[in-house]
Length: 222
Ligand code: DC
Image 1: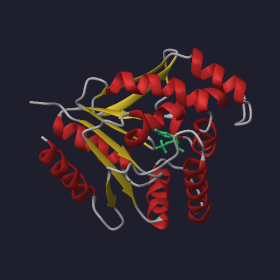
Image 2 (image 1 turned 45 degrees about the vertical axis):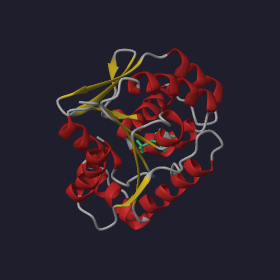
Image 3 (image 1 turned 90 degrees about the vertical axis):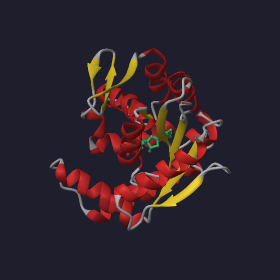
Image 4 (image 1 turned 90 degrees about the horizontal axis):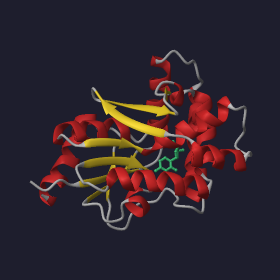
């Protein structure tokens, strides 16, 4: 049977990674979390005491590091130069800086090559901000997931609470607004719904409802 290429885009906290992982499991496809790639570069930059303004050094990291995503036991493991950074890339300081790193066109160009390589075979669910518009414009299924800002902030806040990070809800909401703004207004491949993407607002929807809606679209395409 033909294996589809599925692009899932949307803002932070819309539920992309949770839903994309389940869809990939159900279809027995590979899941590719492109946000994790920008986060891994950001974590490397933090380890080298860089800020988002150290553009040249960040480009150097993106060009020279060996960044790998391995999907194992239903989890994406991210490594940089052989070191597993799967947990570190979710730290709040990474979330705060990653939009600045993802702004840099040279960093995006490096990630694009890796992402297109991984997506070239079909049988993939790739999530991010620019997958349907830029990385895989020919994807068979394009979904744009969104949800209200309070709902997205609530999801991210809960996620961090569960990991033991105490963060004010209001601060979380502000961080989401800031990231949306940077991601949507940047020049290089901004966060945008592709003209042929299906818009799914997940506010008030359960995970399974969203998964079923996407699987239904996939069925129709097959
Ligand atoms: O989905 P996430 O929160 O892990 O993404 C982290 C950041 O990476 C987000 O602020 C925007 C950026 N990103 C991007 O610019 N393009 C992608 N395809 C994926 C993520």
